[in-house]
Length: 283
Image (tube, rainbow, N blue to C red; front, side, top):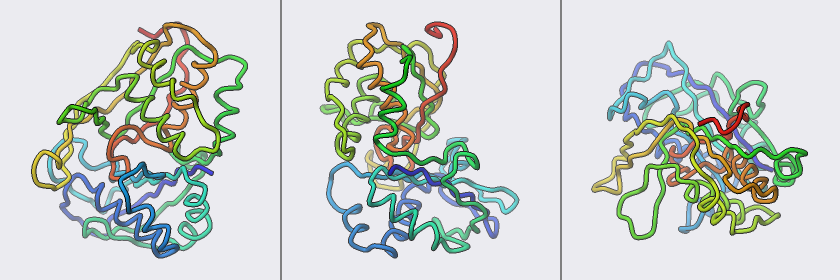
C-alpha cells in the first residue's frame, strides 16, 4: 500500500518561524510513528539508505524565499506525508491517523488540526494505491503517451557524484533514475534499471516553467543550503518504444508518493505527475 496523507492546520496564535520547517515536520512525523511502533521508527531514522516516506514543509511557508515567515491564525497551512512501504502505510492508516491529536507543535508553533485525509476527493494531493495497481494503470493502458509532465511543488535538487553542490535542474536521467532506485528498493515488482539510460538518451525536455528557490536547513556550512527548482516540466519521448514509455509513465505516477531528488523526508522534492496535455509535443 502506498499512501499520501494531507493535514490542514491552523495556528493557535501568530508566530514568526523559520520558513523551512522541513526538519521539524520530519521530527513530528517520526514522533507519531514512534508512539505507535518504536521499532519501525528506529528503522526509518537509522542508516544511510533510501527512506520509504516523505514529509513536506508547511506548503504555504517560504514562497517568498526569505529566511523567516509568519504563521497567521486567520490562515490554514498544509502538511503532507507519504509512505511507499506497506508496513508503514498500514501503521499510518490503522494507528497513526485514527490516534491523531487535535493539535500539534512544529518548530515551537502550536497548530490545530482542522483537516486530515488520504482521500483524493477531499484534497488533490491525497491518495492511496498499490504497486500492482500503479503497474496496471500506467504500463497496461491501451494507449501509452509519448509525453509526460511533472509538477514540482517544493524546491527540488539532485546529488550527483563528483559534484559538491546539488544540481537544481530536472534532467531526465536524474528525475527518473532516482525514481527507479526508490521503486526497486521497495516495490515487489522490479523495474528494469536501464530505464535510467532510456531517460538519458531518449527523453527530451519539451517545455518547462521553473523558478529557483533557495532553502536553508539551519545547519553550518554549505550542507545546510540548497538551491532547488519549483514549477512544471514536460518531457517527450524521442524514440517511441511502448515498453519503456510505460515505465516512464509508471515512475511519473510513483513520484506522488516517492518524491524527487534529495531531502524528500524534510520537505524537498514534493512532486506529482501532471494530467496529459493534448496536441503534440507541447513545445
